[in-house]
Amino acid sequence: MNNNNQVKNIVMGAIFAAIIYVTTAFLHIPSYTGYLHIGDGFIYLVSCLLPTPYAIGASAIGAGLSDGLSGYVMWIIPSVIIKSLTALCFSRKTDKIICKRNLFALFPSLILCVGGYYLADAIMTSNFVAPLAGMFGNLCQVIASSILFVLLGLALDRMNFKKRI
Image (cartoon, rainbow, N blue to C red; front, side, top):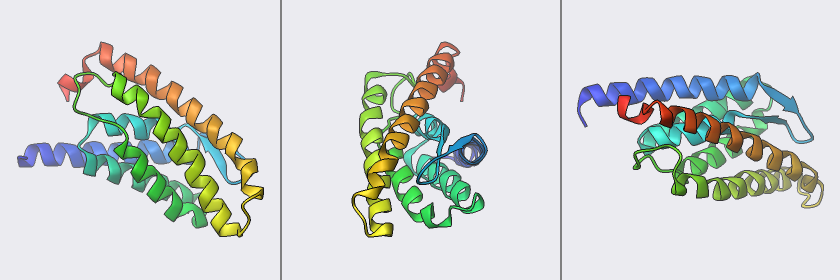
């Protein structure tokens, strides 16, 4: 990779980390275990646009900063792990953002978010029953983020965004 591409990927990764942070920390609804947000939609999007290491970095930094600066410090490590794994579900190796592979990637993303946060909550509380209450909120979060991802992805695909970057 030449230096221009590397700089471009770093800059785009930083921009997406900031977008993920803002849409997670400031555009959220408080819930039982933390808060519900649409920042995951931008994690899905960055994972379709940037090489995997940059997408993972943007996802982990944006989600980690959001938890740390919003008063949910105990969720930083689970969020960094879950969001990094989520970024691995999507592919940037297609001409379009919205393709079969990336649509199917929404299902493992749902399992990672709902199951990952359930498991983290259960471990932190030493209780495998109470965290069940947070699963519905996490499901709603993934659905809202998926809708955002599909709408933005379709709009960007119509503009041939991937060919322009």
